[in-house]
Image 1 (cartoon, rainbow, N blue to C red):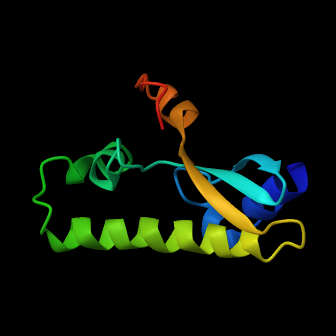
Image 2: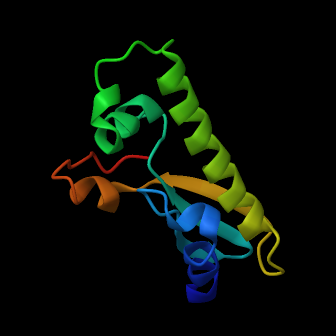
Length: 111
């Protein structure tokens, strides 16, 4: 698992993003990756934390739309990178509660 995280950490496209995608577990070929967004935490809320200027923007604001696209692109790239590894057959995403806790935001334990 540490090799997978090293792979993500050393990838230039991912390394400079405010929330690092990381592998939490690998069981029977299924990699569980941490993500700053989920059904319970929409991307807009995450983006307002890392880009405070977006906090009061409309969901149709082009800058917010572009920030959402950037997040989606980086998350998709992280998934693709992990799926290219021989011991990984699929990826499941889990909300990265540890990242939010660093900002004193404590989330419910459901997924």
